[in-house]
Length: 452
Image (cartoon, rainbow, N blue to C red):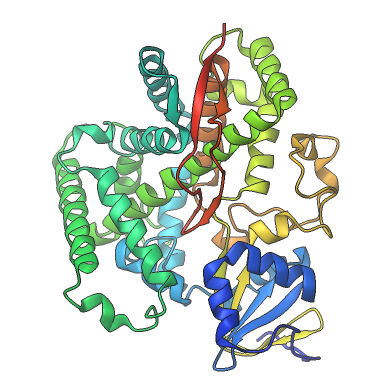
């Protein structure tokens, strides 16, 4: 058991309804202000349900790594995510999670992922060829969502999502918007609301039924098939728990596939959207990126083998995810009382760590709001404080798909940036939409500029 010696309660604003409403209205602005005004560990919310923001790298490491067993995913947000994702790796806990992680982990080993790289670039080249014949104006956010969803189809099921009778993009859009509304609703703590015959509930249940039927049929077909295409679905079907020899049940496979579809396209799409926005605002960085691509690739489509030769490309992606981390907030529930720094954390406290807040902290970063990919160069990266950068979480619960996501983001950016640059549409105001992931509000309308 973790022994603590509580010193004092974290500072913070008075427990008032207005504070909770301010958090719901503008979570990014509110959390950033709390950190600026009160410091690295801040309490807010109600006495009956305290919430603590932990912003220091040391505190983040304590919650996610050193004492991770004391901080479980029993918060309201994860409870709502389970409505769609079931007990996948993102939402499950304890021994069940550990078993699922052991089974799934080999599917995400780098040598297996390398085989999927060509699927990613093929989908991207197809999109670029369509762009060549289409209008200059595009919503980059929408295009990246479509592209990464197509890649999930190819890498998971060996076919594009457009081949399925179920409109997967519509299903995911309905599901993610519904979950975001439920998480942020004042009625969120009352689960009975989700059972009422409300239009939003009916749309969500219909979307989940469509998704369940599609995935159930795919599992049945693949189990009956003689061939093994080597995609993610086959890898998960064939994996066994090294300790027990068990494989996943159909229900567990369904939950993991839903998790991969939801998390596997949404986060990368948002990361790329913000990257193209940042490059449009920093032409010298964009030119430097193109120079590296021209030198190393000479106009050809990149492969996974090329990525080690493109260090600035990787730095651009990492710096974009520092400023605009798709997973902008991570919540945990304190199982037992604990101490973080000089502050006591009562049992049952909801503890929040926010990549967005810590990634922009002046205590961790020089000129924290400046877009500076060289922070992640070989020379400067070692000076980044441990746990100051955690776009994929950290510790044992770090996203299992981190290798897949980084490989995908770099391959897609390298392929697109060789052929097109982007200019933000005049008069479009870029605003943040911190929903389940960090999206640009109203999309990202941009003009494509064909490069010679």
